[in-house]
Image 1: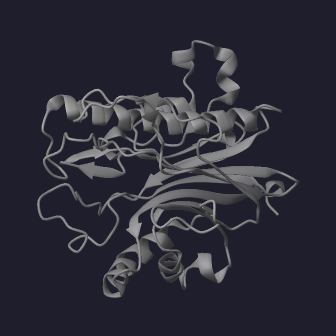
Image 2: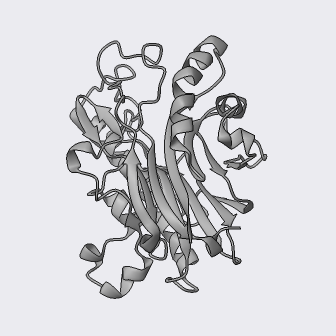
Length: 324
């Protein structure tokens, strides 16, 4: 016998409670989506306020059935002021870890287009840690649930190269800002891959792993390939057991998008799993039917209180002895 098991990821786009009236408007459109997801394991991104999340989840199965919740925290043990990762699990969370430059040291770079010129190299750091939860399943199995939010594609600021927040003074300034953004994004991805290698190392074929989140990267990008693994790029079939399986390739390309930017659909949010989960995978849904394009003129959060990302949900039929 088997039991359905749903793994979902959803970027809530800066969920906060600074404006109670606006929060209620957001809850009115976000809660039906949260209820539709019906995940047993849910990866959330961009949670700026845990009380706002509690209010969003109030009355849903996540609150009624007392799902376990884990969040990213500062060195002081407090949630970050913005863009927290939150993992919500039907099954107990036995341990919580987070990684930010603990597996990959910050690279060094001296900006070449800054005004005035930089004289010394500085660290390229990334803002958001990786959230790793060990979820207890049946038969002493541990599901390694890895929640990620990689650096956006927005260029990093270069001193002296901006006229205003969105206006650059030169092509080369924009280019260096984009380069540094890419370095941070790939660096985060490398940290995730190094974590995966540690989890896989005892026995790759028995490691139960699910990675979900906002990759800010599509399937052909370097960050995606770094995390998932690419036999085509390594040219080594012996590495197949430590590659992940993206749970989205069966979706027709014209429907495979989780964000719309300037009229074009991009698949930036993903769920990928280890090989031992693959036999039980039954399908994936992307709830993008009502997804707004917030890159167009006058598309403010007031106009579109929903998220600009679509939830992605992968469904599995797990053997009953896998579950408590």
